[in-house]
Image (cartoon, rainbow, N blue to C red):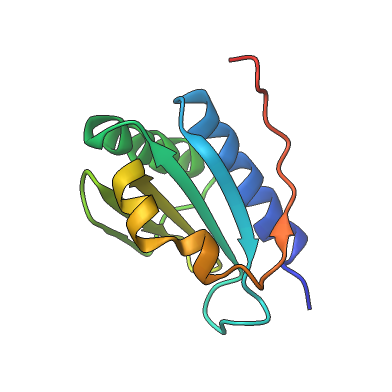
Length: 120
């Protein structure tokens, strides 16, 4: 079973917001075969802790505008997690992304294609 269209669309919107705030290496991972609680992990890299905070705030605000509010927000700076239940957004600095390698940890899960404007 693949991630639902609703959650995939929500991940796409969050990825667009991250891209607009200059987040990089944005990856959406379909977790439906691995986890019961979440369908999609969205992972992105911020240049520094300040940018990570700004990205998280913008994702929170833009998704709230379409009626989505996280059930929890964890972290500050180097790694911020926004949990929307079926979608979990991870915003990390490059150092922590390299250390924890979530992409590699979930390498056997399919990726969800994202359409992002590369000409920011």
